[in-house]
Length: 180
Image (cartoon, helix red, strand yellow):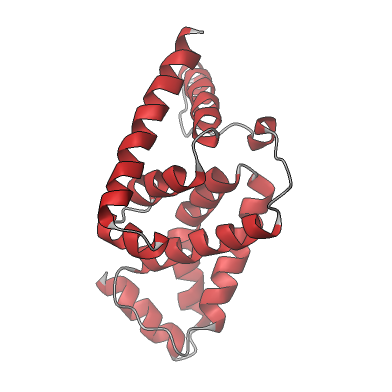
């Protein structure tokens, strides 16, 4: 948190290297969140680009009240929502998500993780967007339910319910995929 505040302060002073450091630190979180919410890796990369462009352009008025990661996750969710509104009537196939890659050096482990990642991407894509958002912001983004409630504009009870129902649905879909 202190490192992020220093990087933002330097960036406000014109230090371009600070933006690169922030990008390197948080690009994977933004990209993963966008990819899961959109189900389209290529469009997730566009969201990544736009999120950091929005962040960089607004740095003059930017105030860091929470963690920088939470702020970037909020930008990501808002950008995804904007894109989804624009494409409201377009149907996206689940096959377009592609596998999530593994960091494992063991071939057998990489195959197992690759198969499990494909199943996870498939079952996540089947969740309603609000539940997917809550799960990703909480687990991937590290946001608290209160912060997610603020982002989604709903009560904390609604966020907790979306999280619980989302996990229950994930469990049942996961079991169904692994058995079937």
